Image (cartoon, rainbow, N blue to C red; front, side, top):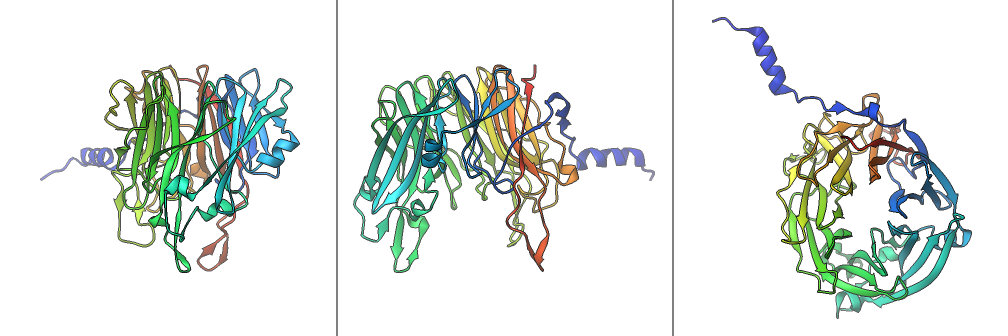
Length: 451
């Protein structure tokens, strides 16, 4: 029997190799270093829509670094912060009003057996100085969050750290402000503490008078973390994840006119929670809320202590309309890539952009700190149809790691930040590598939203 070797080779190539993801590097502006991270991909750098423009904040250095997008829409200017604000809120990230110059800063700490939440209401003036408008404090003991408990139950000890716990991701709606939280109590047994035992409380800190007074609204008592909140035309939406063996993403919503929060509903049971691998984000346009997450439905697992997971970390997306409260069938957006990490999303009208770090192919055991590039997809019809993934950076082939992207779509332009560097894998002793890495550059680039 004769074989057509050319045809056999062609079929082997088609079935054995995935089609390379197209490069879009040429359409992005030349990457510009804006700031530096604290330690490789580890950074508190945050990027906000603010005052109909953009603002960035970095807390990785000894002083709070504040950056504003200049009027040309292309370059960034560092603004020196007010020293008094820097002393009070250097360890705190902000919740910014996207349509004014207002912001709220809050950081939790334990005072005796009570949780104290100092809120700072501020603004950035025309002379670019930070002004503190007023301060307020909310205090609550454990019964406020957990009800009656035994004496062996306490509020979480991480509030005693120097950084406390910063609350980020709040929203403004006129004089109303909502900031989401997940609090994990500690139940002590002798000298031991079982963190998964709780108790737990998830909800929002809310103010109806622009941050002068605050209340607490409770939503769920489940073991949850990574809370997010957003607002549509008619509802507030709250999102959180359930870790441990359940790995769920759930949501609750309430009407803006004052209805109570709805019973939590699961969106997906396919999220990934591996260190910093997981990010879910939610944003809104009109009567529709959009959410994306890192998905594990095609994740391959092996019974190994090292590299137990390999391949198929994927970016998934779904949306929900106010009118029916039903989520659309989720779709995988990162097809063609074997690994994906930390998806982020922004939208403007019906235009949506989602960016993430990842790799088209890599050996088993590949991780976020290994060589990766930045990829993105877009939709111009409110999430009904999506482009194929496009590659932004091209450094993984040279051993560079790009990660922790942050994206904002404003006036038809995609603005993108990401961290990029090279791991120092110098061995300290046989089998051990350097843990503390050096700061890496934080890059900025932009491009017009694709036609």
